[in-house]
Image 1: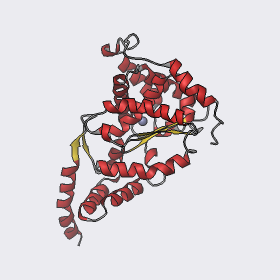
Image 2: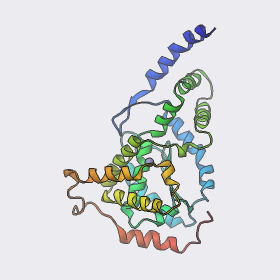
Image 3: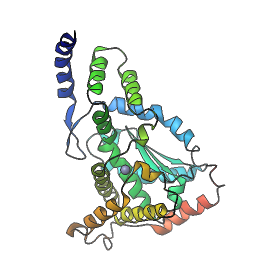
Length: 287
Ligand SMILES: [Zn+2]
């Protein structure tokens, strides 16, 4: 019985793995993508409303939401391959919890408490660029594949053979990350570094000084030092390691002129007037 099962499933598994293995345009890494772009978008779109509600809704100021969207969208054209065509959305959560995260398929979130700790637009671009990097490097897909292994392969077969392709994949993905939620998947050291490096690439192309990335990491690290750990650290571990790695990267020759290059800015004044000042006028977040 068991042998028969193996004999029938094995060729199908091989087909699934062969068709799923592609080179990622952002990272250059070969990846097994159990989830197609359509499925990733479906997962992100499905999880989004619940996630927004869980984080106290959106910041109640259209101009502020537009501001965050504008900075996120300024980097999108510089993502690789077909990534600019994803249905990107940048959501400004009205939450007192320090956090930022992304869902597969181009949904990026940043919390009010995190933005309130920043002092420049380049820092915000650093956080959003990093989250864009998680999407383009398809890190959630990586994690799902690693965690559920052959289960995903089996589901892909089921989807190929079966009827409701998207529903099946979404259910499976939900199953794989039940409880913590897809956004709370912990990324490992290499994935974090990969996102930092992609974030630096995107922010520089959009005209931001990559020093903003380093500054925001230092701010987060300091926020973690005073007792209450920002929730951000549970989904983005190892801030000190990352600070060291980013600092080391910015010491390279190619970054020697970042502070004097007229094409790159930090934009502290603009951030103050268009973002921080408006935030101060809003009632504090409920949670
Ligand atoms: Zn991250």
